[in-house]
Length: 640
Image (tube, rainbow, N blue to C red; front, top):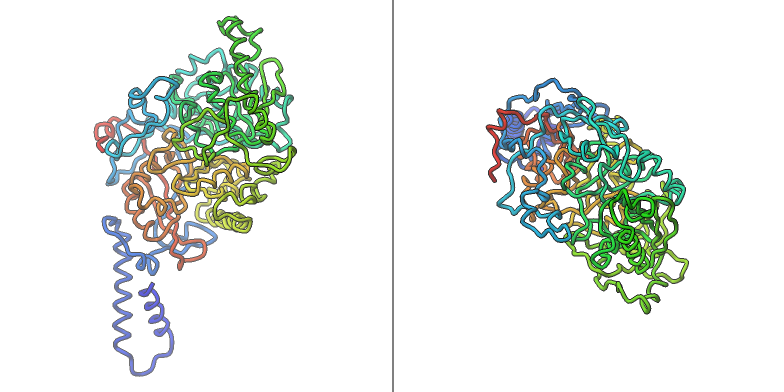
């Protein structure tokens, strides 16, 4: 900044009428500074990224000025293209030969999920599906290469067409079309998959099935906004709930049904790889308005009711649990399920007993669907413990702890209330009012450092920032360009809230290194998200997201893990021709740019929305389109 100030001061003197006697020292100073500025600009445009650029130099001379009317007027000479070009396959990879620091991984790693790797998982216990939980590679096992897209990869269909269609080349698996053929999940039509919206327990389609649920509990009055679908299949339930303003987190393990979650994400539906095994699901307590299982094959009545106890933890007070499939309506379906009536009856009786022990009330059972409701507070439930001894209430201090936290056979206690009619933790507004209303967790003071004023300021700040983002990345404001977005350090979910009117969804990640209480705020706003340690891989497939946003993420992780490992994970989960916005301190952003320039990304540093004198800068980047090929396979490296 000192150099910039001196240059500006000297330049202003030159613009004034000069005395007859010129100060030689001033002339020399201006000459040196101008020459240095010119040489630095030439050096930067030469593409040399091996050295670091000082923050002062960048702030003084190299940050492009953004024309607020058009991004293409950028003075750096680089014009990033945020438009996708590969909706159809021309048989070529479209790669422009460049020199890269990071080589492609082997072609067989095109669907690599580091923490759910099928080879590593076999080393762990089969009991309770522990082997299907997250088991991440050690640091020395990490791949330092770029995960390739499969040959012929195409830009996914835009929403809402993607709900029914996906390119076969993007997820080249036919297993589900065979295994689930009679259940109308998915079928192949030429070079495309079609998703008819069927399911094991909804042969007439997901929409008709959801109508059946709507006749049991209201899905249209705004009281139900967030849902979780356990054992989601290809997430047709979540896909069709979106048209009813209900946002569902769909989870399924990476198992013998290849690519269930991958299909869901390809369709533009929120989903994660996840399993009920020994660890808590990575969501805070009191997150979801509704939980759903349609023949999800989870043994709800086993292990002391542990899995139903976990659903109780993540359900908000007054939330609903919906079960369809075995053992519901067993009198009608027992022959088709090839199980004895005694076995099915015993299973249902056991599930009913676990639900009662949690103080749930069964409110409806009609044909193939049963619905239970969690109590709005625990006044009666605490009294019942004198009669129903098990499960007891948990004594652990943090019910929101859910990152590698073991499940316990105990009830997560709800916040205390003054009276039987009071809702524990505070009443939520109906959607869409709850998006901008002060969340109950902030009202109660249970989130450290958060107040109603700071929440309002954060909301207004992100409204302003999204407006600026749409100026520097115009396609962010265009319907259909982006569908799956990831906010890697979401705080209160302000980024997602400012985009809520667009035909897209945002996965809000609260890093384990940040304030974990903020994820509860995200859910109280009617948004969805997850905990994540960015020193590890995310529980998702490659090419999951169209757009990644990282606000101060690298400063947060500066002393925790390698910057390049986080960037390589970003590359893995970003679609070809996907977009990245990284905002951080200028020193951090400059270092990031030297790495991503070797990752087949085109990148550019631009000013903060408040102008060039802010230390915080934005790195805009676009991942190049390229796919695996025989040549790249031969040249690939999976060495760590």
